[in-house]
Image 1 (cartoon, helix red, strand yellow):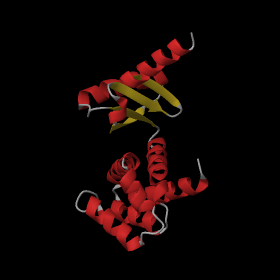
Image 2 (image 1 turned 90 degrees about the vertical axis):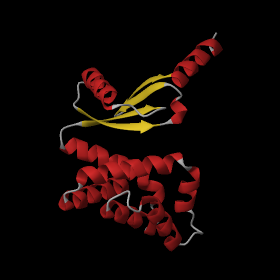
Image 3 (image 1 turned 120 degrees about the horizontal axis):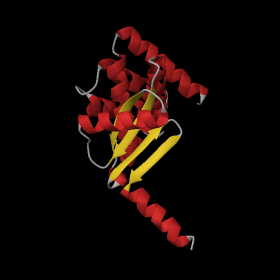
Length: 177
């Protein structure tokens, strides 16, 4: 992990912990990072060197106003002001992983085309925990590119149970003949 990314993540973790809002900041930053990664327009606006920082800050305020804690908004402002918005997804993931590790857990990221209900997430967490031998914290992500099924990642282990993944496997098998 990049030292700068790790440094920001640890700093944000300590600020959130000191404010007693680690869980909400962790969740909010993760959601913001997912939004940033899935929206080329937003990513372009927040990383555009020609766009003044006050305009970028206004975009952040419009998107997050009333939807995220003031600490989370402030942390995003900090990254935007320091021209580090492009690193927000990496910083958010590092923060989530460091926070989970401090609780003796690993992070399982589960991607699906549609939102999953709590029971399904719990069953998946139990199955992934059994398969990896780790206690897990689950981050569910809606990702339309999955098409159907799920893609789960725990550390470097990826389990692709998606329709798109199955089609790719089939395509590879046909092409290798």
